[in-house]
Length: 543
Image (cartoon, rainbow, N blue to C red; front, side, top):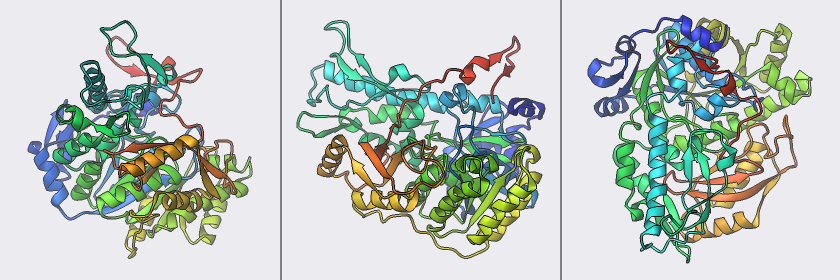
């Protein structure tokens, strides 16, 4: 059966029944249909004020293009924890339409470890992505309108104007010209689009802890610069209030259910390779107030979403995870070893070495595929044992919660240990030291090189007080380096920094490396070609 066929075969429970098991009444959330909901502001405050439960981060080895089942493991682990008597919630990201209609597919998990209703969550969900796109594009429109109507703030039209956004892989929109058509239109200039998960508005929403915090962060967004280089913000333009109004419901975490009827929070959706790759802080904090265990994830490998959760999100949370789960597959490790599983385990060892620097215990979850052999799992376990980490086999796709009970028990045992947490770098460290730490200790490289453009970007950031913000690296997910062809555990490489983008609202610097782009394109045979809907509204082809 496909993911969609499994999802459609399971009867959905009313969301009020699911929420009730976690102490939520019907007054604590607004129902959206029978099976979805959004927490009220009062319920958000109550949940955040409760003593926090255990926090578990799920990350992964360097993935193949098909993914290694990190979201599936995240959902399955939460189900497994509930199966062994621990009240658990998975707090994960919302899917973006780009991957849904592109190559990677949806982001609801898979098989018997999914969040439901899968079709709704994958397609617009509760309107959060459209709201984020509208808020983002409102700032674009207001900025262009300001320039057209006298430009009192002296914005330089030819330099780094706030882009537009759309939730679709569309390479034709990466670099465009706007304002054509005469004096009634805005001045002609080069412009472009980013995909919604790469929008800074997405990052701002996911890192905000209240409407007031959201509005303040939106006000810091840089809409453009003067000819002399002075930043012009969304607050200067007068946009932040209206943008916050568009996002007043989008900031409220969404309630859905797992395939086994457990509560799940699905909220926010920044990409892990071009943004910070983690679900919202509010969603995570609410889950920790409602459950004994919260299981969340960082996008792609531990060098991307994992590192960003630990170095960007955890300082905002004021705490680190109690345990980290590292997902590995035989498929991925054979890929990295050019068919040799033992050689490919060096990629696993690199990720383990990186994650153990933070302090919390690391459990390796070997996601079983039907083609795996027992001796292959045994080999991976021996490598992990030599490295001093526990490794267990899980089967979230085929076994759901029961297939993840062993990893759930390993996580409970791991979180019973006393552990400390410290990020990769000090927040007050200079940019050069932060990036050097990431390159050497996270990616395993030798150093980095700034392009002339990036050096100019850094100088501008420093001059305007942004130079030493945390770093959000935009790079390929297919290698620990910035070159997708360098698989396994490369060494001796240098990271090529093309641009440095100031995300003043989010509070970090986006370091754009290698050939990464903030607007992906569709492949030759995208998933959209197989998606359809029948006369009764029943969707097919999603995966």
